[in-house]
Image 1 (cartoon, rainbow, N blue to C red):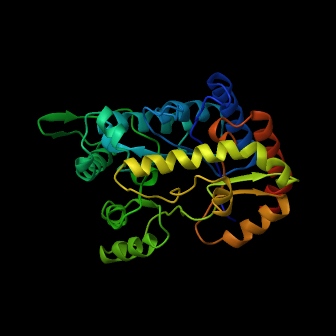
Image 2: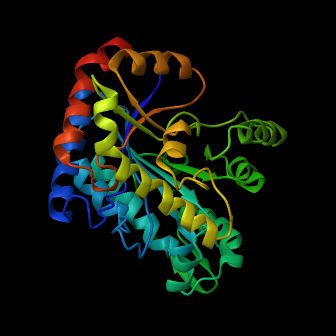
Image 3: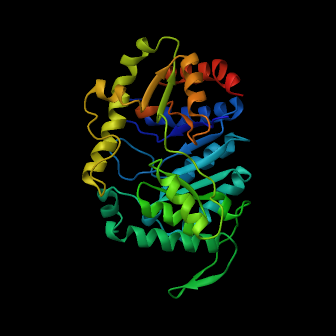
Length: 326
């Protein structure tokens, strides 16, 4: 069965839902998704965003863990070069304990220059910092006590899960696939073809490929009995989501992204990355994507969407889609 995911980035642009309501609703939706039988919650991370994109995913992950029992809590993704890896290892231990061993963490190099400038980190150092940070966290979260550059590293408490079962790396370049294979971690690529390179690198190193989360399929699914009637309500939020990512890519290290050129609503909807579907169409999409590594991703509160609209989609998905997937 194709995995089902709810994603929260907690953006609250001025035209959207207020932050207090947004955060309270997200916690309620996490509990709902857990009870309904969703597989994962994804929590994203960016810093200094004018629309309030969440900068503290471990805190929100803890709130979700306290409200749930079964669903996996995946921090997708942590921009590791912006953090002290010792503190990240400590937070991994605590959050995995709070969640009862349900934590997943995806590490990426990052690409938004303004974020790196705010933290006093050079974009040119991101690969080196990502590699050294992963290496340190794997040792520290395994219980080892050691010294790095004259600094003692000793992390307690330790997570329930072994770190190799918690950690993934992600990215959109060949180096990200080689990094995941080298560290023997799961892989979350931005491009489907990188799985081929990842698999080959793992086998070259004498091991089978690890866990994989696919990058394909829509990044946003909204379920409605009448999709046309919902489009006008969703369009401002979808545009904000797409155009923010396009702006960051243009100003950052990548230059372009899957969101580049999405200034026009018609272009955005035709891209296929954002889909409003009837329950029947959603089930058909799930069958089409099953076995590809993709997930059905719902972002119920995308760019501060009205919670009433978001709840209708989630409840319809639970009633008319999930039972048919199971």
